[in-house]
Length: 487
Image (tube, one colour):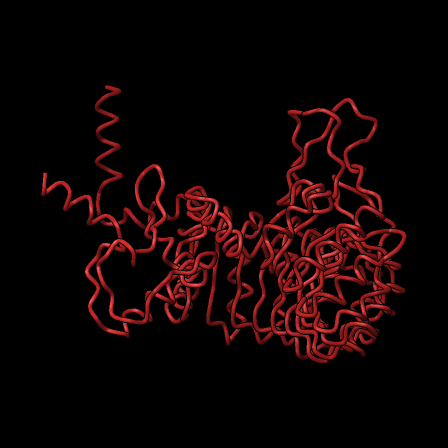
């Protein structure tokens, strides 16, 4: 009985033997719960029932973590990986409240969670730095639907019996969006990145975000229009901006034209990265950005933006542009004028073409003339890119890094004819290019491979298999075994 009582008493933290040292009492005082003050006598600790403070207990025993302050427990929980924070929040209400304080990013799926009467989002998560409101901005179907529409990294429920067709899904009205942005800005002033749908009528929600969230650095506006960019000058520290005028399969908006880009250029002079998705622009809009946004280093044009041919000539005004990326574009590079009118952008070092239609040799040559000083070029899953089209890139004389991925029409001969003319080539990546074969590699090409600093060669699965099995005899043994079975 004595042994059992002794073990039972060891579970209680106040029953531990405490040395008579003031330094230890100071530590215990700092570890007290935020909502409970421990009655610690400055005199030496005496083990008596009158001097003991009650220790919190639950159905599974005493909770020794109740002696830790919120600040100390937050430092401990911050070392836990994000995937385990959800299960940690199930320990107790206090732990759930602390886990909510640790959350920094969130994607909203229900708008009422933000702008409802309870305003649960800003009440629970006050330390958010990244918020994505786009999925919640679409009106949910009247009843639960098994049909899920996925576009990019968004998955939305849609009613197959509704009158709305794919590509014209209903969005919340401007008043609801403005109210939600107003609540978010006042409740989470530490925002650094925001992704939202732009209101069409009034823009007081975006103006409130610019006023309250002074640390906002990245902004993504869907269904963006020229008028939605009017309060853009209020974002003093904005450095990364993505404008999405329309998304094929989700919605079609009025779009962003040269007028909106001119407003943007005069309002955001500290931009470093800019992406235009589904926008309409020409020489005037791009040149305005080049004149005013002197810090712009990266420009991305995506999602079938309707760019007039003169926009290529305007790139020469971007004096600090280092990366030009074209993504999911069909006719973005359209040029029919004299090449001498294009000019050159000597600061561009990286040119990336991803999922683009490359069938017009004249337009592609115009792009290479403007970016003739590039050191890194990449073609990823581009339609129409064959040996004839790829041979135009030989005019780029300073390429050090080439990446080919998903280019099934380029052969080994077409690859060799280009890269052997690049004297400064240091890195080569060839992935999923089925027409490039190991047995067609010439001695001159293999000699180039041997002097490269970085080399990744996986044109198809057969090439990887032959390289791994070379010299082992495994392929031959397996062939004899299966022939014996057939016999």
